[in-house]
Amino acid sequence: MKNSRTTILFFAAILALIFSFLLNISLGSVSIYPDEILEGLLIGDWIKTSHAQIILNYRLPKALVAMLAGIGLSLSGLQMQTFFRNPLAGPFVLGISSGAGLGVALLMLAGSAFGIAALGSGLSAWAIVGAGTIGAGLVMILVSLVAWRVQDSMTLLIVGLMFGSAVSAVVSVLSYFSGADALKLFTVWSMGSLGGLAWPQVLVLSSVVLIGIFPIIFSVKSFNAMLLGERYAKSMGVNPVYLRWMMILSTGLLAGSITSFCGPIAFIGIAVPHLSRIIWKTADHRILFPGTALLGAILLLLCDVIGQLPGSAQTLPINAVTSLVGAPIVIGLVLKRNFSKEF
Image 1: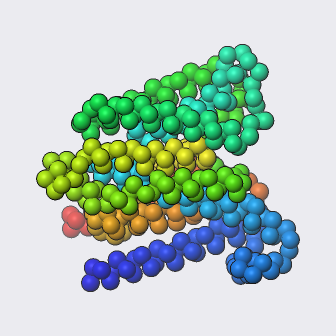
Image 2: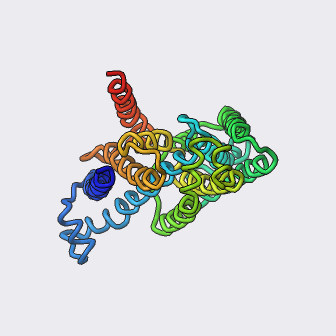
Image 3: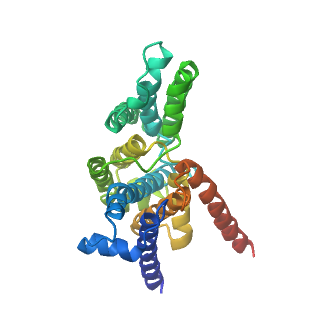
């Protein structure tokens, strides 16, 4: 009975993902019917050339980025919550995403803060991605050095949080001394965005996300054992040190690359794993990992639909949408679950 329920839920989630994907690329300042999109994508027959340009060069890459970001952040959050046994842990707790933000801040704000001619709006997307990647990579190296020296997972969590706080402090200092134009540019980046990426950048992001998922595939059983603590995991033959390295590698690649390409995106990494546990009603990571990935992709696609303001050329920051839309949903589901337990 449980297996049939799980199968039905996965089938429904896949259908919801297809629906969300088509809805995402059909709505915007110009509405394009899903049947035209399917006909154009499958056989290349578009009613208008402009529609083909809109779908292929803007909406389709953005929808794919939304799916990749939703999958990567959700899986990172699930790993963190399980390994540290902390429901508030997310993909940002090790400071890797903050490192990406520091790299971008140095690129955008340092020149203005130190009286050098600011780079301004002439920055290319590759330059921003490169700066974010370098920053995330440096912090990941520091976290790895700490993980090599300490054995306690809680100590690693605290050190990661301190790394994030220290990096955020540096960014605040740069923001304080920078000029208005540079500060506005960085503020817009920090709000998060799923658009603006060309196909070569989408290909690079998808490759990194795929590589970041590989350690998860080989660690599913280990994460199940970690639910009862490191001592129990060791008694089951799990090497917590090896799992810690796999988690740092996976989270570093997923959260670091997504932050570099899209900016920091809040809520998804913390909330989606909880939604997955509530919906699938299991702690088995063989179900939670694919379920969380599907829910993350669906939720970020729907948030992007809301942020596009269909029928308008304006778009809302994705961070604002994910928090405003997602947080009440999770609060309601959690309260409903606890209320049903009491009665």
